[in-house]
Image 1: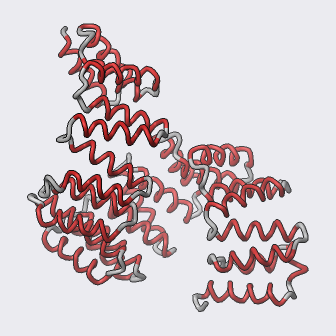
Image 2: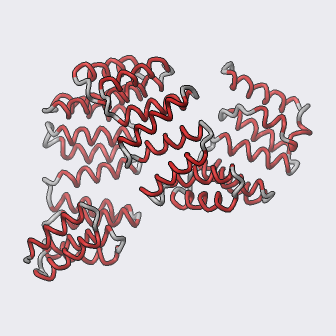
Image 3: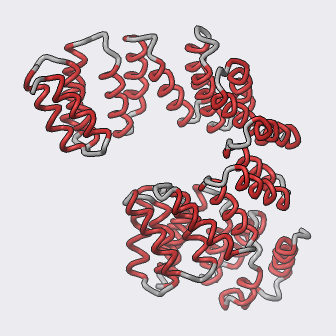
Length: 448
């Protein structure tokens, strides 16, 4: 068997997720042709996928040295830098990839996306325009640019790119996608009626395009039109009966409304059956089971998420909360710690972890965690309310009232908690306390 056969077998094995086996074939290809940059780069990719970063870097650098004008090893080095969280090197190697091959679109896409991820919308736009100024009819690049700027919350700029993509799209799928994304941007810009009309145009032209149905329902929900949202999702199921995504969105709609919970469960189960490897469907299933007080079923759904991604922070958080409710503090802590390893700035995880220390009367550690949560998100009401409780327990009533005020402004509505918690007993006749309780009640009733 020769070089080409080894390389082809390795690529096939890599596509099937058999990375160790792929590495073995790539190494055999490199052994057959030690100075072949393609084989060296393939070995590096396999090593990168196995987390062997130093070895991967050596191979990518070697491939680049063997073929200085090849963009691929520079792209690989950029991906390696992403794994190491080295921003300067990410940009450096992506720019060098563009320099090596100005006609390689993937480098522009990756660099633009990276700038967008970093919140540099202007740099992201400029990167995409370096390509689109030369190829104004590249609808895929225009859509990539629009999606990147949409994710960076630059909705006006994203709309411009989607408008351009609609004009040059040359097939039905491409055009339907561009029109749907354009409608999303209109919705986020507060142009509700235009967004609805845009979604309906897509649906009338391509009723089997499930994304338009799903996003129309989400748009109605976002604008407080619950009945229209449900109708949009149900119409979507008629037009796209095999769509797990629309089932998931309708189930999520019912869960948010706290109605039709049994139907929500059925829809979530169907979504998982149709799209088992989609994490979001498993999350919805877990939420539906929890809403119906099937905690073991909910835990099973979140464990299924961890089977797909053992480090998923939200699944660890949900499992931690379930263990906490069962009184298993040790298991809860284990999952909260795992959640915070992957997402150390998650205010909900910090608040949940703090609750264990609060229950154990370790107020100092609880306060430290809650302070971190409030620093990350100053409008996270649960953390502010918990900090108010800690200060009340310490007898620091002015600070407790100040934090209650902030929690109320952030949307706290659980007046009953403050009325019944023993640490607030001495404040129940305080005028400020009573005013805050009244404001929470108004918010809960929707009159404040």
